[in-house]
Image (tube, helix red, strand yellow):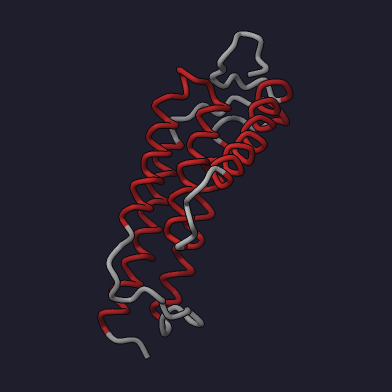
Length: 170
């Protein structure tokens, strides 16, 4: 059985999920619903996510009220301080990627975000960060993910993402 402290933490997660779902639904109201490609508009995905989170929050609240989250693994870092270096790497990746997307384009912005987030995750796992090999692997992986996404959105779905050139290929 759960102690009161664990029950409060779990209920906080459940209610937080409910609040995020309600906020997403509230803000999705203002997104236009004009049908586009395949008969769905730009508000379709936010509504799918909001409804999914709402259902998850109800399930989480039910779990907490009937005995707590079952089969939850014990945390391996209980009592250990947060890993701030990984947080800084990942935050830098997201912030730099978002701030530079209009300057360097979608592909390179997403690649930069991927590379810096990868550094943070590798550091958090205790992997060696020395040498050029992890950098090259992350850059190539980021490009191999970002470029097809850019081209699919631009060429097939006709959704304009910021590019580096006017040609639409980079």
